[in-house]
Length: 318
Image (cartoon, rainbow, N blue to C red; front, top):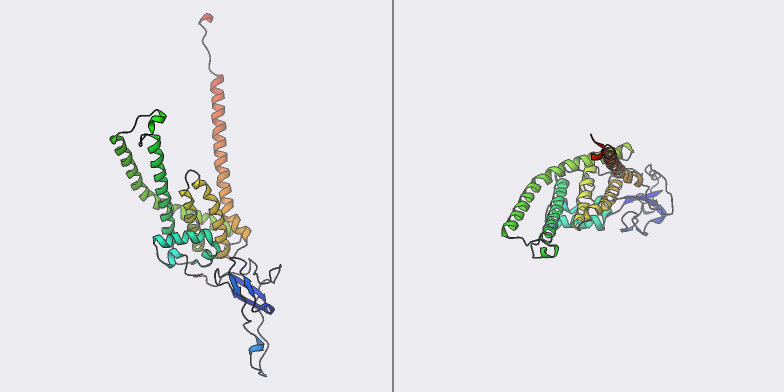
């Protein structure tokens, strides 16, 4: 007979033998300290009735294995709360605000398993989409600040242009730059939401399709969409790091997506990793092939043009 219970933090289904009841263990997914409960049909706690039958058989599922007796295999079914899973993340549980946005990003980086374990599987697309839009607007704001700082130094706004042999900017030049920046902000406020909508549905659609082809999709598309938006929105925050932040964001994005897909779809880790990684590698391969082709074409054109150019020698006549 086995004991089945769920982690109070990440909602992971765990299974162990009835001889381990009462022991203190840690969740193999999120590391939360748990106490193994008593068996649901403990005959020792029931009155001695003559007509009492044997306890019901345990629910079907894969057998125990490995050195961890209370760890449920990753393929052991799906979460029963197909319409819920929890009330999180903070962005939805506490309402959209600056504090809930920061709390969601912090929880994504410090306790990814807990966030996705408590994340709603359904509930609409607006919540995760708004989170992604806010994240991109913040990233755009930081990029704008960096751009102003670099232009200010490069064009001598603070009197530093003399070191580069450039004249100091006057008031008209400063006004022109500030006007351009204001126009850039207004344009970005319109473009970022549209870009976020297209990217969120296109990206999550590709990931969900790949996961379905691998046989790992056990939840509807909306669950994958939620994982994608919260993972991407949190990873975009790496863009606050100057110069290299937007490139470093690829690493946490792949990690967050893999963890989220594994926990939400209750699928093996390799499928959760392959679903976002394969499309990414395909895109990188296509881009590299395109640039290689363009470079080869330019090199061939330059070589052919150089070989066909003649030099006129007046001594040779016409």
